[in-house]
Image (tube, rainbow, N blue to C red; front, side):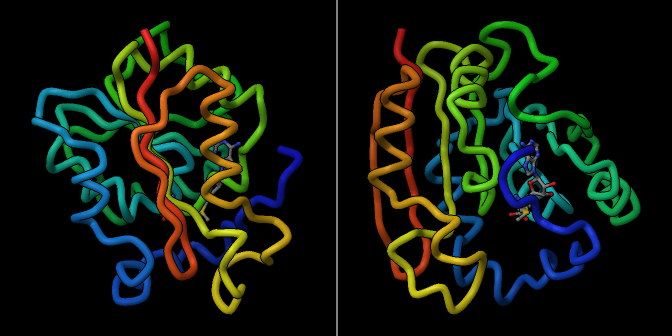
Length: 187
Ligand SMILES: C[S@@+](CC[C@H](N)C(=O)[O-])C[C@H]1O[C@@H](n2cnc3c(N)ncnc32)[C@H](O)[C@@H]1O
């Protein structure tokens, strides 16, 4: 793993809707992904499935990818939407074929997997023209909530890494404590 991985013992904290939607709302996530209901999507580092559920409403199939089986167990007990499939895997080596995904997204997790290997793997599995959407804690934030500031990336650092991995940056946004980057896999 290499980076600091969220402790599965704190999984319950990821279910505090009032706090979570203050950082990233379900609506802005759906807008960034721009789904029509026909897409196959992956949630990268899905945790308890807090945002997976929101996206599943607008997608044909969602793969909830997480490296910790305990997180999947929590999500299974909470109740899985019919079109969500749990995938226990690191993002660095995904069990998907080339161009198998119409889109992929990640919420508050990029800082835990931001390696060249992981981004190259995402470039392999997202189809040309498909979206990669990242929301995460920003290095420009004050660190009052979320992981320590020195473990985070800024919007421009994330955008630069995605561009180097073969994605075209559609939008890049710095907010109070978080950032959003929407990228499209080049042809
Ligand atoms: C901070 S939690 C966020 C969970 C979820 N995205 C959310 O917003 O509620 C990060 C999750 O990413 C998972 N994770 C971290 N590194 C990963 C990796 N390299 N591959 C797959 N999952 C990873 C952790 O196990 C954890 O469940």
